[in-house]
Length: 222
Image (cartoon, rainbow, N blue to C red; front, side):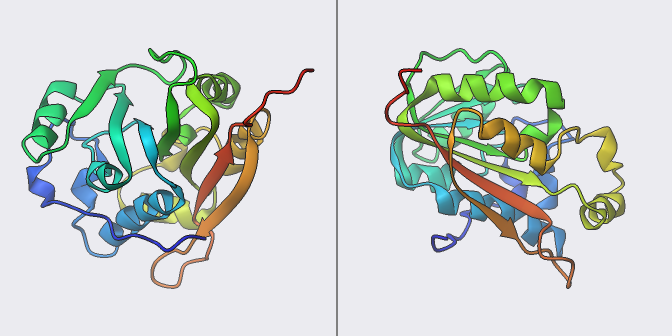
């Protein structure tokens, strides 16, 4: 695995454009804050850089400062974020972004558009039957040879316990397991690696997984 970068986190109170359910509020908490930051860092570590990157489910844009160091053109798609507020927030800090509201299941981008697609804690919220369509769309918008980096929590008692401490029943929010996500990814993409992330306070090692997949440079003739 590549060296883990440090997340360039601004003061949590400064972030704008998201509703009260956005996890940015957890980033400054003891223990949990480090866990939330670490999952982003593990995903960022897999990105190799290029011209255009798309983050699906960008929320407050917590990864944008790091993405700006690797990509010249940052795009984002999110169901609920206030794209004007988030875009203006980062433009004031010297980072131009191209943000839209929309769904991963029908993305408003042309074929072969991006060098990388990033999804941090997004795919587990889809129903298992929607995973294939999501990855079909990811495949479509990726350039040949482009990479998909996703992070998903592991469906385990340890992760369920962590979310219960936050007041969440994980099963009311997460519908697809890490195995179902990886299975859908393998149908059209080439697996480079899947990385497991340690939990805090001695919890089991595999509480979060980062998948690194590549779109084949040449499509088969069938």
